[in-house]
Image (tube, rainbow, N blue to C red):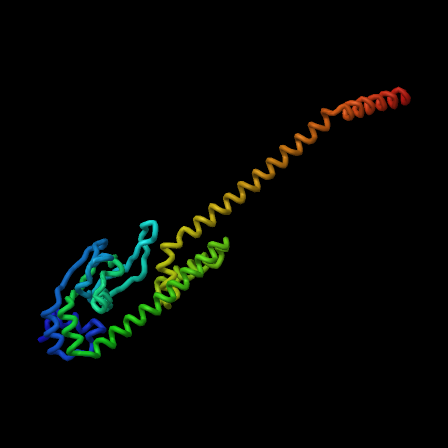
Amino acid sequence: MPSELTEQLRNIPLFHDLPEHELDTLSHKVTERCYQAGEALMRKGEPGTSLFLIVDGMVKIVGESGQGEELILNRCGAGETIGEMSLFDLSPRSASAIALTLTRTLELDHASFSEAITQRPELSKVLIRSMSSRLRFATTYIEKAIDWSRHVAQGDYSQTIADLETDQTAADGPASDEQKAGQLLSAFFKMVKEVKAREDQLKQEVRKLTLEIDEARRKQQVQEVIDTQFYSNLKAEAARLRRERHEGEG
């Protein structure tokens, strides 16, 4: 009877087509691990010595902005494989992976991974398809980030805010690469609405200040006219004419 680990491996798309005996052999080479929300599966810059097969839970793949802020690059869930890139190029981890929920994984080390690929070359094709899909998503992600940044730089927030609202509405259902990219970038671009609100408030304050300045200038100009000798003479002449008119009527 298949073991629990064998069944878990069968539910990973990478190993769907492996025969029972190979899944059983592989089950003895993986290490089952459990991560609490907020716990790191791997950190950027660490040696890439294993890959992770997500049994259940949700993981965020994160990078870091120039200011040291977390930038979410992707989210991965049950059935997905992460960390395999470092096993191919033997380079340090290119990003960190942080559990978003209680997450269970099966960890496969480099030696066992290489052995599995050697014995079953078709596994490479599955991994390549997976990595190609992520590459297409990364391209969409970058294009959307550049497009939004360009609009914001030009002071045009309308399209970016509309996209954010559309992508957020689609968050509960199946999402395209573009919508998924928008959902991930919304965490980074949530400042857009705040910037727009501050800009609108500043414009209102500038308009109010302009009106106050114009009113003060108008009062000053009127006062300057009142203070002239010409205005005093004109006022005195108007008073004289009114007296004469009253005397004539009397």
